[in-house]
Image 1 (tube, rainbow, N blue to C red):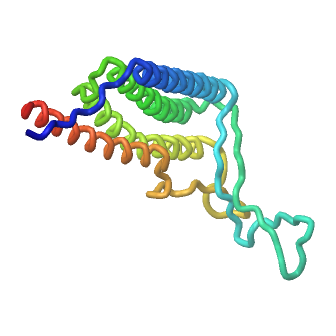
Image 2: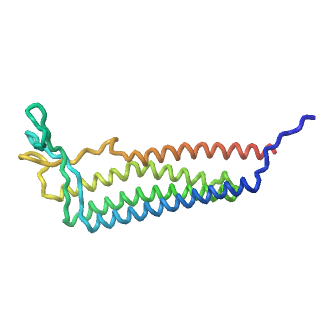
Length: 218
C-alpha cells in the first residue's frame, strides 16, 4: 500500500520568523500611513491659510519671449505657463481641493488598513477570510473612483478660481487658460492601485473557493 505524503509541519522557528515578518510589515505600513496623514494635514493647512495656487497656460498672439541667454536668430525661447498665487477668499475652490486631498488620503489609508487586516488574518491562521476579500474589493472600487474623481475635483476647483480672479481668459495682448480635463488627467497611481487590488481580490476569491473544495474532500 503506497504511503501518503503529507506536507511538513511548520516548526516553531518558522512560525516565529513568519510572525516577526508580519509585525515588521504592519509596523512599516502603519508608519507610512501616519506619515501620509500628517503630510496631507499640512497640505490642507497650507491650502486653507497660505493662499490658493494654480498653474495656467499663458497665451499671446505672438507668443511671450523668455529672452533666455543663448537665444539667437535660429533658436528662441517662450513662456507657455504661469503660476498664479492668490490670497483672496476663494472658498469654493479651496473646499474642492481639500475634498480631493481627503479622498486621495482616504484611499491610501484604506490600502494600509487592508494590508494590516490581511497580516492580522495570517497571524490568526485565517488566511482566506470573507472580510479580507470584501475589504480588497471595496479598496479597489474606492481607488478606481478616486483616480477619476480627485483630479476632476482639482480641475473644477481651478476652473472656479480662474472665474473668480480678474484675469483675461481670451483675446487681448496676453491671456491665461486652464488645461482641459481628459483621460490624461486621471491619477495614474490610484488607477494602477485599483486595478492591481482588483486582480488580487479575484485571485484571493478563487483561492478561497479552492480551499473550501479541498476542505470538503478531506
